[in-house]
Image 1 (cartoon, rainbow over the protein chains, first blue to last red):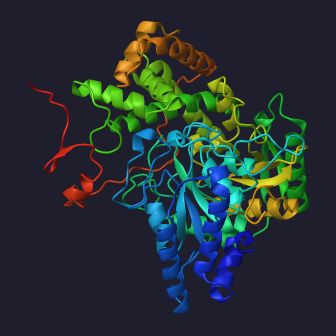
Image 2 (cartoon, rainbow over the protein chains, first blue to last red; image 1 turned 45 degrees about the vertical axis):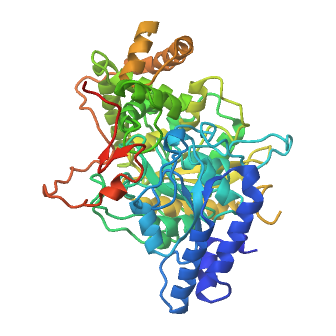
Image 3 (cartoon, rainbow over the protein chains, first blue to last red; image 1 turned 180 degrees about the vertical axis):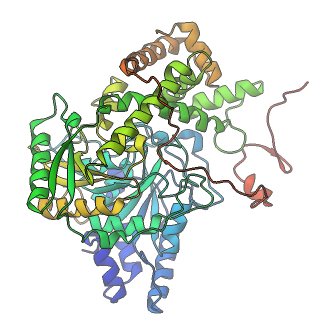
Length: 492
Length: 95
């Protein structure tokens, strides 16, 4: 089936004329029609625009003019502004918003010939680890527990719709954003490869802002090579983002073939948390064995401030969010709820437009930045963030990359971890450090738990050395031979 | 440090989010639980550490102070909930 192809296979098939871009796009639109009413992975499906882009791709292919992604159908997280296509951020407050401009990352993908199937569901303003906070309803993970097949599992979050769409074969790849783990955790929950590149590698221009110093756009795909092809297109210097890195984009696809011989791989001992499920620890050990057998050297290292990462994040991210989300005031775009005076209109608009988790984080952020508390909370968190970065710099003088589990558990059921916000936050315990330090990290599916659910391993690398991270990821992928498929997918 | 109901109302007001009286207690519980968990950061010795704003480890670029974009008010106003000519419209603020 066309929907089972990888991006690399589809690219070769299109160039060889074995099928057309319209065929490929139609196959995915049909899959969306069949599966999306159940999975709710897309908030908006852009049928006619997708078909027009596919026709343009076929015309380009006929002339022998093709880019890296010509004719490849993708899902776009509904946090990326897409010109003329509604962009909601999963929030009521942006329900009517139709951007008059295109984000840099999506413009790069369009430049390279990609086809956009639609806008993928997400936690509201990317705040969540389960996709349960979306104003457009939860997303169902296409994977099922062997022993409890009726349970509806979450796809992870915040990029839950992107992950579910790619896992269920409704899209060949997807964009996501990762602020504390929002690409890597859903990738692990859905058996996918998820890439959070270095901070500054992918432009944030036109991406609805959550926490500007932590937000990282990146790709989801079903193979490491596919994710490398996507990142190669998405990345690059953008003068419109003042934190964009002015560096050439390496050939990530070539880096996947480098191998790991002679690399030094660090095992941060602090990640071996009390209560880590035995099967996750076993998979981690297995991953280390695979890398050792492939010629890497395994080294024990220490990231002493690991345990403070999450609490630091839950000061820095809400602080930045409270500032970024001040723009939703009912004046220039989005929802407005009238009130007598201007201040009342602001209060009514924001109470009606933001869901409970977003309101909670804005209030925490407002508090930690407020007079009298700034030093005790925000400034202290920024100093601990400096210590966390120092930890990473120290270990990267000893090793080339780190291997860790991606998440402390497999996908959980809708409704679980909902009673206490902190329980949900703990899902990001292994991922958040890479956001605070801005270093690249990839989650690769590496095995199944006893219930048949995918588990991921995370590879973390030096700043701007995504190439080594891709090389290690490709080795884990090769050794793991992960071929399991979700129960709910196109053609089933 | 524990937030009392008056502080919850003040944070809501600073956040420009209308909070109903019957929401104050649950917000108080949720915010105190998060802030209580964050207290663990007080264990860390941060003497002499410079605060870090971001992970980019790069200097901010400067650019020329010139207009590089604009000139399309219709696009800028295309999502406005209310407008008056080429202006955003808001409830009256000056009598």
